[in-house]
Length: 533
Image (cartoon, rainbow, N blue to C red; front, side, top):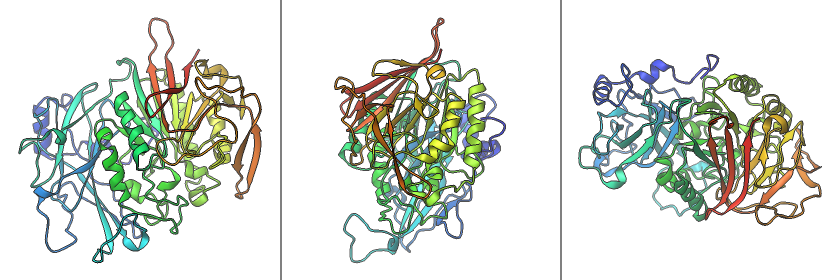
């Protein structure tokens, strides 16, 4: 993290812990010498229009919504999901849900299964959603509450040992897997990143527009099979907000988020998921920006400025990563258009400059929801991103831009100043220094598929693909324009994800990233190598 970044929580907050928990873990050898591990003090998430009510880790108890409390032993945690901090070699966030109010939620961690330290208090974020806002997708009983209350718990861990596997369990008063003999499903694990410059190659995966269903589960299972270091989710996560317009007229069912986290728990409980924000994450019932729900459910670095949401940068080994909020420059879904008033663009340039000046960073990967370039007409391409951000990608030689939004797979030829520099077929190598930035749309995570205005062309099924293809963009007034382009090199209509294999420089050979697109059964539909110099 650069000195110019302002994190949501100060380092003192990250290290603040109960004396017993910190001392016990340090004694167990799980921390770096002379450090402590802790949950942070909560950030005040509630506003008069934002029904998100966190409680203090010092006494993390949420009042029960009714007179009779369910016993803690009957309230099993679910929906575990991990995220990295800005420094994945030392920072991991463990998040989960409980079905009702609990007392003293915690995480215990250890370097051996069954050997856990003292409880580390979790932050409670309570999200209250009025039933009158919603259109439930399942039948509702005659007697039902007027609100849906969801309890999200987060434990932020800092000063972990790099390149180390940790085992963990989560619990609360009345339910302690470590104390009552953890069952196999109670125990999960994560691995911290190696310290920068000390690790070997690694793989990460990415997709957008997942939703809930058997195709969504299949792409999630493919992540598990690839066992990546982390997964990037490029927005439109659960589709709890079915409309995606950012208006209160959108059909919404808050409990679909429960299904989303349960569906992905087998993978997300051990592989950190780093989400970007999509248009379906604009939930206008939770504050003026509609991101109160995201702030309750996820803990990402969010280090662009104080209280930024979904806008952050971080580093894994020799790769610098930036998550952007495309709603800020989205002309065809303008609910949050220009809501950062230029702050995101200014921050983006400062981070790109810092990453490109860092000699330990070989590659810069930017990920966001909306497509800077795409020929799929269902959502089109984003003229705002082309105007505001693409010149910065050119200036700082961004290697790879990943997005979702269109439910297809598409890879461009390398682009500079809005035009392709040369054709790069599947199996070829691209040099971002000479050729420009490669843009990939990977929106086939599980949501219903879209279509292209031209024939598919992908690995083993290449078409001539020499004719210009129409790209549709919306201008600031919301009117569509059609432009013929020649950079659409690979198009695939199907469910898939992107797997990126990163290899550091060795013995005079430059670092490289092999970018693969894989269908649900692991079949490759595209492959390209990014290598600088």
